[in-house]
Image 1 (cartoon, rainbow, N blue to C red):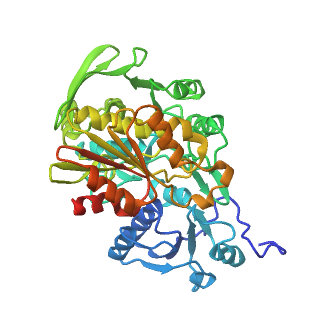
Image 2: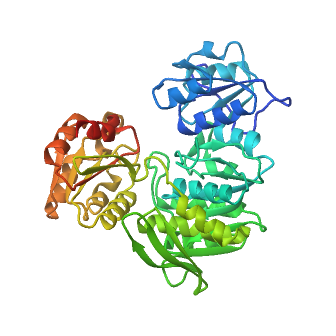
Image 3: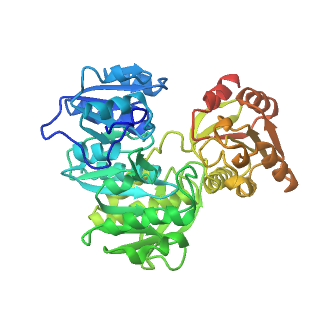
Length: 483
């Protein structure tokens, strides 16, 4: 570290790793979903793993404890003593973090999460990278399950927990590694998107919208990151792109590789038609260049999920996976935790937990649940928690996301004081805007108030859909328990 800058770390985005294989690896910010998964991969590879974090609580604390990984609570310079052979820096870490400052002082080798993942898990693999503003977690989980059923033993790291596997990571013995392509920044010393580190052979692009307002200035800024990703796909690779998304379609000329489009619109090379949402399964037909390719059945529901599924059918055809294997994989896919996940059914009331937070995701999730449960009253509970939803950039758009809900409950955004006062989202204004559109909506200050409202207002036959990209004070389970 240069003299005169002792209050913050000066680290370079270049690959900084010891020439010899490390023994002891320390992860800063280990309790994040991606970091804990990487810790599991490294532990399974035989390395001695330690980590630190200031937010140590279940389920990640239990997960790491089960792996016998020592987790130090809080960040401190002494956590890097004895000095590890390698440090992996999570993107929650700032340059003012005491461990980051000590890391720079020690001149110890370090990597960001995506650099480490590529180095330790993906180096000899062919990478499949599902990416996009929405649907990448479900698409990645589907891809891994199809490859598994085809006997390909894929490696994978996914941003949610697929119910078909015992966890969200695996090294795998086969030639492919499936990694969810996150457009969020890599680390405080590398502000480029994570997915640029994954050396994609095959990329699935589900769509591009503005999100992550804390790091992206506008939609054009987001698009530029995806264009960089498209440009690095090699000529021998493949880009599978959502033909229903005009923003994605406008970037396809940047590809050096073949491009295949999928969707519901006429211009797509692959299409899903004759979609029938039933109580337990969704039936559909797939067309390839307007000719029938196959019929299928899946427990997934909602047009957005059928779109995600269609992209993996395109991938399966490209990889030469037999249709009977593909059909069985689709039919037996169990989804991902916190994606329309059933938390329980009590007193005839169904409680669902979902990760939706972007206005489009909220709208499509509500639409999917309502289409599946046509005769039931739908209570939609939404926590504006993400870095974007706590800002007023989506204030007006959220007012158009709840039309298919019968009752809407909105709490105060958590940690709102961290957002500049002139940029803050207003839950009260959203409720007023929803009421102006003749929708039944109510404001609640916190999760305790929400719980009381849900229990008082719900009745037999209702579906309670709870949406947040965070723990939401364990509200879904609390509702089930209270019912």
